[in-house]
Image (tube, rainbow, N blue to C red; front, side, top):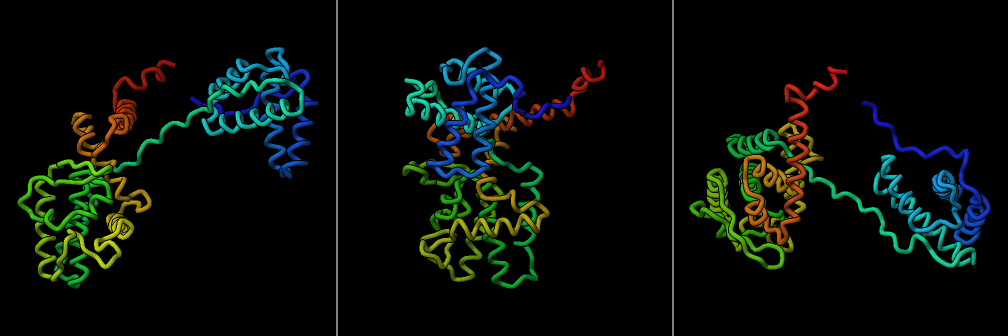
Length: 327
């Protein structure tokens, strides 16, 4: 099915009485705001489209009420305009009616009580389970490389431990880089994490994460790295920075054959949550593991899961294309 692109309605009957007040408004913003020609053209298109909508309902633009403006915004949504485009049109109308009030053309502003169309919350970017596996395998391979220099192998062991912990726990990158040195003890089944607002939570560690942490703890001792941080570095804080870890992670992704632009510590946190839900975890448990104060923040991952399930049904259900065959 071909979906029509959002478009403006015909200007053939653009609404009685609209021309003079629209031109007066455009002259004002050209003279007082020094608006460019492109800006003037954009305002003209927006206002003419509204005038066409009003004309179809035998209404005058300069006499429109809030019900007509609400109906117009609803019509924009029905025509497929994004929330950002709806917001821009409503902004043009707000300025237009403010001009009419200030210039004495009318006493009230019909847009005054209208709320701006809300943008849909963007779905988080995630990696598939296969992509995360490829990333982990690349990190493990580099950590085992016996031909690498001592410094290169130390960085590889660190990367593997950070990656395993990140995917096992869903920590925020700031929480990961600021882990205390005591967290490196491989016999600990859980991590105690201080999150936003100073809230403490316990997150369990996988066997792979515990093994990687033990390897890193041993590598640190061999290298003579000491101090209060699990991942020490020569920085203002004394530990590895978020930026340095993010940069190293992108390099690892590229070597694993993944699009590095789509890989970041936060994307792995999203992957952790989404993959847990895919495998049957309770939403409240995921909320606690992520350290979200409000369940509504965690619910964004259910939308990701719903979209993926829809694609799976569309691609694999035996009756998914029955309607198209019938036609």
